[in-house]
Structures are given as structure tokens and as C-alpha cells.
Image (cartoon, rainbow, N blue to C red; front, side, top):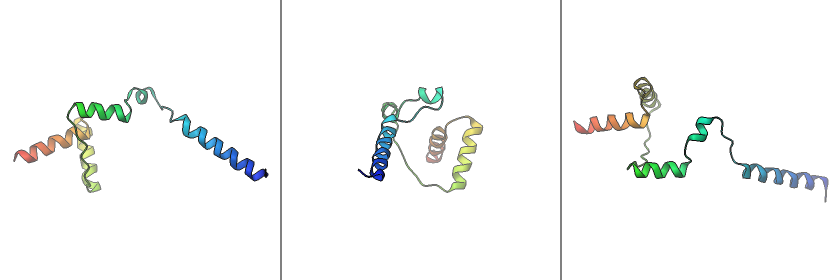
Length: 88
């Protein structure tokens, strides 16, 4: 084998090892969060459905600011605002 082929094979081996290793948790709070599959099951049990929309960046910034000042999640704020708008 050529020297370049040896380095190429070594690189492939290292990449495979990195893919299998997974992502390390950054803090104890991250470790306590459920993974995506578990979170999806929890959301379904609560009757939650993902709902994607495209909004202007100014509106998103305003929503995030309002959610932080009221100390609620963006999901709770959006649900509250939609309920109040639909009730009119």
C-alpha cells in the first residue's frame, strides 16, 4: 500500500469511531432532558402536535422577549395568544 492510502484508511477509521462515539453532554441539565423520541412520546401523551409556521424575525424577537418577561415558554405564550385571538 502507498503511504497516502494508509493515511486515507486511518482517516476513515477515525471518522467511523467519531460517528459511533455520540455527542457528550455539556452539563447535568442536558443529561436530565429526555431524548427526542422520549420527548415526542411525552408530547403525544399531552395531546401536543408540532405546528411549524414562518414568521418575521421582528415578530419572533418580540415573542421571545414577551415570553422571557412573563417567564413562560414560547410554546405556552403562542398557545395563549392564539386562544385569545380565536376567542374574538
